[in-house]
Image (cartoon, rainbow, N blue to C red; front, side, top):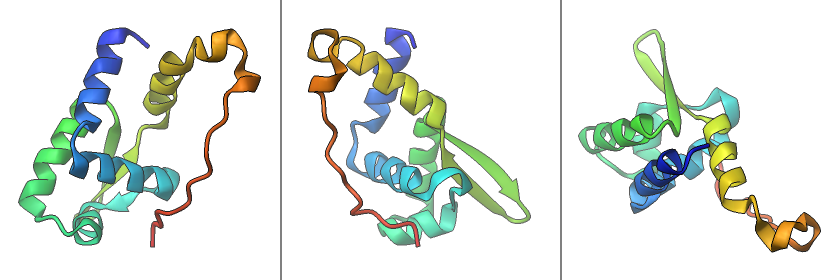
Length: 110
């Protein structure tokens, strides 16, 4: 992943609502969640959510799909993993055994 793309993705996530949207979509996995459900779970108006969806989509962090009258959003895991790989490329001086990631299961999809 190129540094410009990483900067754009990090900039998109540098806002509390967008970060919450993305984290919730990561928990939901490949099935994602309907836009209305996301707005309801996060107590954000649909008009406000639209702006956040646009920013996250433009950064490549989420993708949408139409299913009837509903729009479902899903985290773009390849972009997320590319960003993480870029950020951790030289972690612990190239010794990944020294790195650990905390377990965090505080977000629920349902």
